[in-house]
Image 1 (tube, one colour):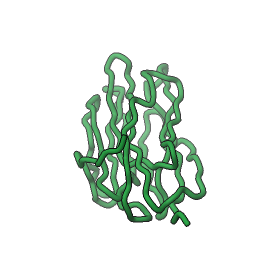
Image 2 (tube, one colour):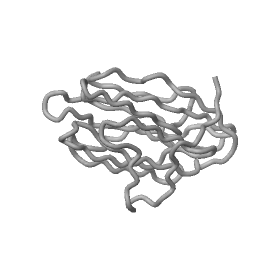
Image 3 (tube, helix red, strand yellow):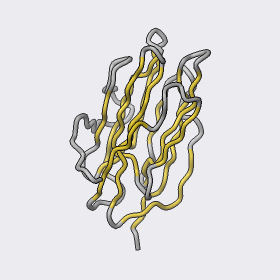
Length: 176
């Protein structure tokens, strides 16, 4: 099933500049990058009063231009699932994300929009270490030439009711 991404929230400001939060604490949100774009920057703050995070997620053009086909997943995790790691199938990269919060579970479920770029493939990949501490600030920016291909987290329902997140990151190279 292919689709064209509809832009609900595209933020093209520079990292480190004023945050533009995609959500209020406990609010659902979606960030859909435009055609030829992928997510490259994530910033998040934890609000202890709400037991939730607010998110600033930004898009930029992918390292290789050209047509891409995209598809949304269903939810990639269950409420309070201790650990999950989702990877886009078929050499895809993350171009959209949807987060839904449950105030009774103190957790988020995630849907991911994965895209496959015509004329490109994934090169060398790595998994990050955790990009935030529980209850801490997260700020992660991709290096040039890379795309995010995986997203996951480990949930703690005892101390902070928060997740520590990790990413899978790959080079995007010409498919020769």
